[in-house]
Every structure is written in C-alpha cells, then in structure tokens.
Length: 233
Image (cartoon, rainbow, N blue to C red; front, side, top):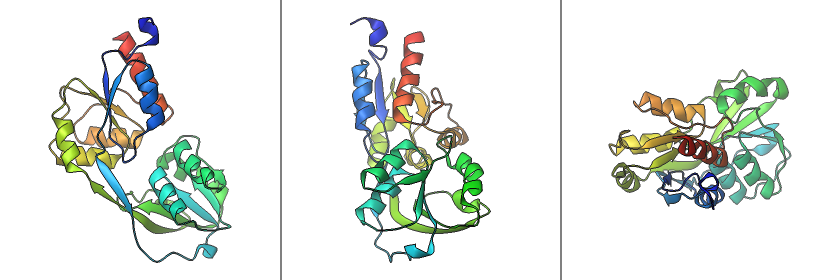
C-alpha cells in the first residue's frame, strides 16, 4: 500500500482517556501508526442517594463517563436529555434514552450559549464527575448538580508517559492534562493533540503548545488531523 494510504507509518500515538477509544485505535493502526493506551485518569461510580428525577425537565450530560455511570443505574425518567458530544449521546441512546439536544460544537462553552433558548424556564439536573467544571451551572437557568462518579489520577501511567519521546499524545480532558503535569510531565520531545478547546486551553495554561486539534471534537477527527500533519511534514 502506498504512503498516501498509510500516512501514520512510523508514528506512535498514545491515548490517555479513562476509556480506550477502540474505534480510533483501530483507525490509527489502519493508517500505519503504532498505538499505546496509558489512561491518566480513572472513574468510579459514587454510591450516593439518587435525586428525585421527577423534579427535572432536563438531564444534562457532558461526558461519556457520566452517561455510562447513569446508564449503569438503569434509571427510568421522563425528563428530556441534553448531551455534549456524539460519544456521550451514543452511550445514552444505546441504553434506550433519547437525546433531545446537542450543541452545534461539542463543548460545554457552546452548550451554555445555545441551550438556554431551548430549555426556557425548565428545571435542569447536570449529572457530572467530581472534577467537572461549573460551566454548566453558570447558565441563567435552574440547574442543580449531581456528582455521579469520582475521578482520580493514575500517576503511575503519567510517569510512564513522561518518559516517552517522539510520540503524539492525545489529551481528551483537562483532568488528563492535570494528571500528566502532576507527575512532572513536560512538553519537549512529544507532539500534542487535544480534543476540544477547553482541553487545548488547559495544555496552554500549563505551558504546552497544541499541534493538532480537530474542528469536530471526536477521536476519529483528531486522528485525521494527525494523519494530515504527518503526511505533510
């Protein structure tokens, strides 16, 4: 197969999210890359009292982790569901829930701009992880928050990652960036890919530069961006 069909030959791409994106891993390898999976964060469902879901008109999810944790509880609800991102929506829909709203860009920043016009004076519940920012609660709406899972750093993997050179590291959340930096990870000798401008901002705040960021915030699209950059380098 010609080089144009294998633009990632000689590249190693490291994925760092709490769940291995198997479709993206397979896609990267199909394009010639070697891949590694070093999750920098891990999540666990919090054992807490359930909210009264009948009080809410909308349930809001901004991550696949919160959607997955919610689905594990097999909760029945008549509330409408808003999701940030295809992955988050897909998790919910696979478990029989209907997603009624997604923002035009898969980012909480864009969500808070677009959702109020849809929600009106509805009562909303933001279902989140312990390290999630308060962006959603900043909307001029009635928004309660429920922490459904805890997030912790996997420092041993961050230590392994900081020893790697000549690789492209994919960060999909500010939490993963924070874990990497807590272990003393630096930015020299690696290329950096970010999914989402919030993650990009977290990297820049920590002194790093982002080499790849897709317009559409998905793993597949970030692989496409890396492939374009590798072929043209």
